[in-house]
Length: 428
Image (cartoon, rainbow, N blue to C red; front, side, top):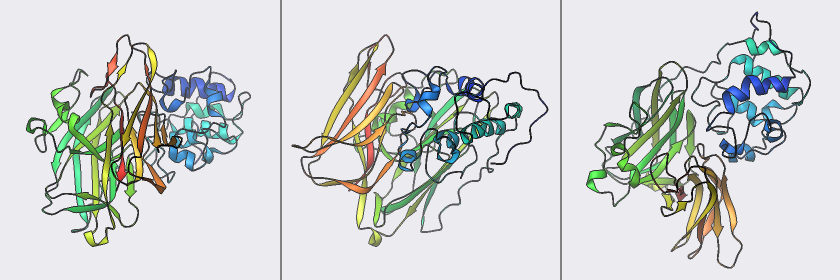
């Protein structure tokens, strides 16, 4: 990133560089309720003034992809090895791996000057005291620039299908989450080998669900209707959420652009006359209206090229209670009746979930942790280089740590005031 041209504004303080990072960046933009503060901090990272420095320097991140790439939250003298730096850069394509959404969410990102100030601090060794970056950078209000949003180019005829959520508005200081049910129009079964998505900025997630076989007719959505789960006053629209109780995960992305390719010879099978309930979520924490829009390309291969037809894993624990005012660990085991090979795992919990672990359970052997997520909003999809092979009678166990800070007991449910406990993934 080029060093920005500073504006002619005199800094108001000559405080140490990290102190200015805290007061000018972390405290107003990151250490806020529901984000990086307190015991329920997103990703386990508390950026409040008392602990931020110790939680950053040399600490291994909880993001599985960043961890696998050898990053730490902050590596002294090495911005490009520091997840913090990557998470602040708005333009797409800065790093190859999926490290989740740019921070702070629901905004256009930090200014060019703020990002450069953080970069200079890390490059100078990330000291806790001393002045190592030019404070005038903090006065530069130049917005970071991203490539203009462009719709995905649809697959060539015969190579796949494109679905989209047409452009919609997200009003100021509002989170808009909606569903729309789309039929694919395929007259024969299809095998999906690659899933590519693209969303406009301010996106939180884009998910594709099929409907469970036992879905009652009243819960099957009307095709193409837009169903907002929040009313204009922010209250939940329970009727529009009815279908959520019968969703089966198919695919999803937490970043504006994603491109998931299954291993050679593997593909997800879709039956004839398939349909998806498309779910997009946008967070707008600005004073202006922003547009939302989302595309997904489902690339297909002939059945003759598929050696392993994949299915989606959907293991839900919907019977638990979280007592008021305490931290609770909920465990649930799922046993497989036949040999099962798992190639990828992800998880789903709501805001009171602090940690989601998936254990490999083999009778007579110690449980083995194969998945660990501490960020309820941005659970990574972990693809195993060596697939997990479970024999008949073996299985997976979810071990979820919740912190119910409310004055009432909480159970499984669809709304943000309730909780969830689901293992998703791909298997054959």
